[in-house]
Image 1 (cartoon, rainbow, N blue to C red):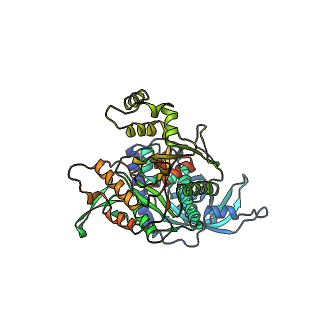
Image 2 (cartoon, one colour; image 1 turned 120 degrees about the vertical axis):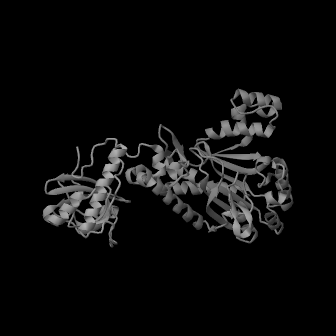
Image 3 (cartoon, rainbow, N blue to C red; image 1 turned 120 degrees about the horizontal axis):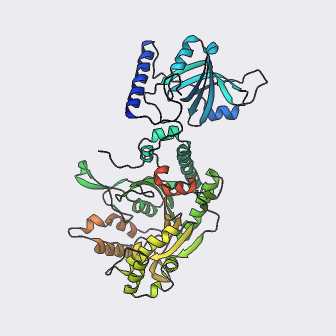
Length: 506
């Protein structure tokens, strides 16, 4: 079946030749419009109302009468011809509404113009609202204005973008044809707004720190490198804003946060994008327990305001339950659950053998710490589905955190795991400049390769700042993309990023 434009209204796969033919047909229509003195990429269309607002404000008039005139604009998504009248669907970012276009209402010339419109064209219409006999809210079009001619046909109505990769490469088409994608990405915007509202209500100040840094510090990750010609210097895209935010604590800003983009040159997966959004938070005179209460309150508050529930459906029977209290367990306890109660009593050789039995990538010569952390990363973290605070982590893994008072081998931190990923690590921040210097120097010595210079790897200015005195503080980083995945039920990070990084097509 074909509509009056010669384009199929039932789902069939279009080949390249058909696409070229449709493009040529639409280009001819554009030229016809121009020849008739009609600008196919028209001027502003002021006083437009959102379709959702039209629906919300509609009150059924007495039988046989019409509601008030409305002015709406959007993309034409469907047309159904019926002789001297046409029904059509118009869509904007807030929803969709039916149009009724009658030849007797708008005249022969305008009706002929409307018949020539293609699915995907952007138009503006004016007219009163009414209910059809089927109870469908409809606009009786009195005026129609073409605002932008679409030269390329949209993906088939029922197929949508069947190529998953194309959905991400051409997100604009995904948003036009996939209501679920639009829902998730609109929710992301609302989540960010509610996070900011929450933080400001708690007395935190939002700040901005450099994205181009002379040293890639604040985390252990492979940075993106660039070159600053004016300074004749190598620079790095930040992997974390931590060291700058701590400078602000030194400067007297007691409660700060930054919603920022970080960059880590470490590949892509369903749960990793090299460019990602984080929120880092620092509160003077607090500790990791301060951050624990903050993240519990933040996530549950945002979930209720945006989603309306603390039980998030992730499909296939999996429900993420954010109801408080959340589980608390130490790093060692969780490793013993997966590696055996005797895990830490084994000899180094015994741990390696046990790890190999569990399918871990471990081998003779690996340190005890590396073997245990391989167990944690492969067997523990992916199985933390419900919210879990992992506490008391080995000090060697986190050189910027305070040691536990009763056990210097572990640091006073937590990592919040939800749905198999780390969502928010938090520290009782190390503010002793002597110990901090030693930790960073030890880390440098452990990881350096031939030719490395300490001044290129250790942030001396940060250490100097600490020597002026930084108050005790709690600090936390929140993976915003991962949090959005949890709250929306999305299982791939690309579904919650408008324009995710993709492999370059050659």
